[in-house]
Length: 201
Image (cartoon, rainbow, N blue to C red; front, side, top):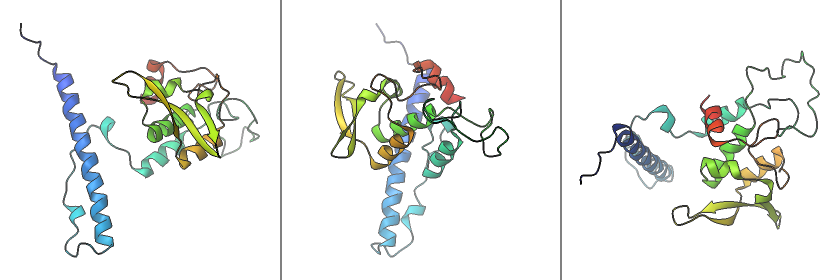
């Protein structure tokens, strides 16, 4: 019997993912070309200007550092106070111009999810499951308990957190052992679909 043909949607997604991978490699080459040019290894025209990137759907575009920073700067605490809804309260007055309004603030869960995703490479589902018990200190360095070998069966290992991630997590506050890193302002963990909807919004 013939196998059913793949849907056009799946085929388009696969092609887009391949283009995104190609763009990532070209971007890496561009950085190497720029480095070589600055160090004098290449005296001719700048080869970094030649490789062109595929045009991708906005959802598949790789963020630059400035875009990441703009996103994080837009994230605000939904209920004024600590990023996780407890601790010291925000003492700014209601009429203070720098106090975020209901329209311009986003849940801090988006910020911690973004940082964990960038620096650990974990999938959304794994990030949403991470709790305070998945973080520990060893000789002043923060370590995180993450899922590896997803295709051959889930295996969890301890990995050192990047210094930037450690600084960010410490600024947010490491939650209690049973409390999730990514959670609502009320302290509840997000379901996968709920979080994806929040992110898309």
